[in-house]
Length: 473
Image 1: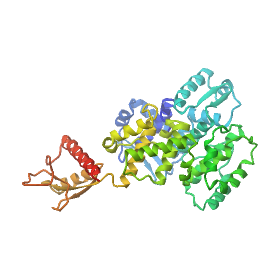
Image 2: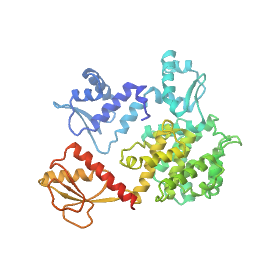
Image 3: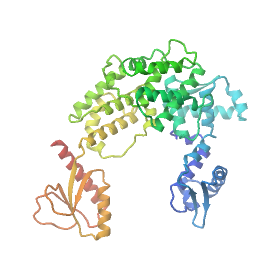
Image 4: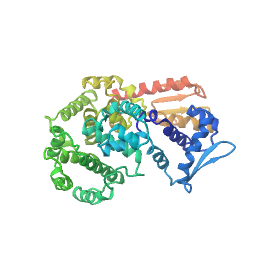
């Protein structure tokens, strides 16, 4: 779901929230618990549950809302996707219908559109202002007369792809002017030319992008021809000459001005979806985005001297840099949802701060970009044993059941731990709730049933072990 969209269509998204809560329950949930979690009254909850009945009735053979003495629960078949219900509700929201209209058509005024939708001018005007606030981080907005999406064509297309792809989830085809089936021959030819068997998701992404581009051609909205990146990427990529006839054949069906970037842009999209190696692009030093990526890579090597920068790492960083520069930080959030919890950030806080400072990344303007790059570096370092293994001898008086629970919790800590109960050589740390004499190995003593501060102190100890191992690696 688009971040903060629930603020615009509160009732619709409250219904979706109720369904998600019920879907997450293994047992019946009382009305009082549900209403407390949703911060609504019991009466309002019952109204919402009643409003959900028509949606559920459409799939009666697959899912039902059951009421028992203990509360409510959903009885559904495993083969039924809850996204079907979420989409049925979301497609009726004002944002979905208004965005779909403005993406496909541009010949309406706010007054005439309001009359067609049987709403007042003031109601629609007020909600357009709210939608523009919602869209502000994406650097697009609605023009009022005529109704039209404002912003760079690249941002409009990427927003349409992200919004439709994550909202429809393969359940529905959101494009009014073109069918999905018409692209099957082109996708088949693409597989033959690239010697790749495309996944179901790759095929769906291609259908969406081809439909998005075709819809915008009909409206005579094109990618800015002055943008040099797409042409340079195509001209420096060995596969472009192979795919150019296919791309040209697709474009020749439309009356597109000569001075456009459309063919190059399509190739850029294709090579991103197919994950075609882009190493050769890093040599295009006269292209600003490539130059910035190369500098970023050099700074990573300086600050993390032992890191091995794989081709995949470079491709991901180049794409993140493109998203941040050409689209905006909010597009990365929408696409990647990169927020994650890890001890990595704390272990390398100084290095990461230095890296982003060197590359002039402001936390206020590039939060999601920095979070994604952090995750990218973390993944790379983890594969190279930068998160070293710590061997722990566990000595405990706990009985079998309690001990099993303790070991399970230890294994869930964000470290590479090798736990043993047998005395062995090369143990890094002894973890014990029993006093041990004459131990040369570092020993961490804690309560038989560890308290919260025991776990906090243990995590700090393990972080120090990791740091020492990394420094002596």
